[in-house]
Length: 90
Image 1: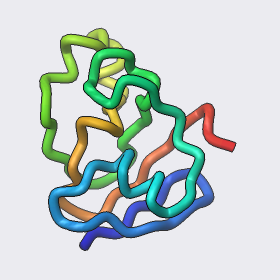
Image 2 (image 1 turned 180 degrees about the horizontal axis):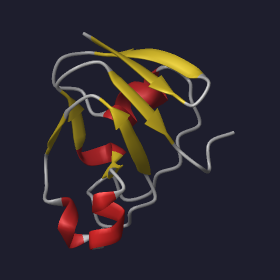
Image 3 (image 1 turned 60 degrees about the vertical axis):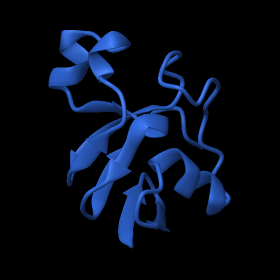
């Protein structure tokens, strides 16, 4: 299991679990829509740690977003403890 810090929240992700699924399981209102990596509603910024991409983020995110560490929560599985920021999270 990996610890995830997302804005003011802390929760755990099980092995093989996406950031989105772990956040929703923890009761966090993590904005999402398609859950397939096509809409980018679940995008957040990776501040620290490593993730495994289930799909290539470059199909949805532009070069600037990728350079800023933007990832898709529905397509990201933690490979370590993570620190994330999501601007639309309340």
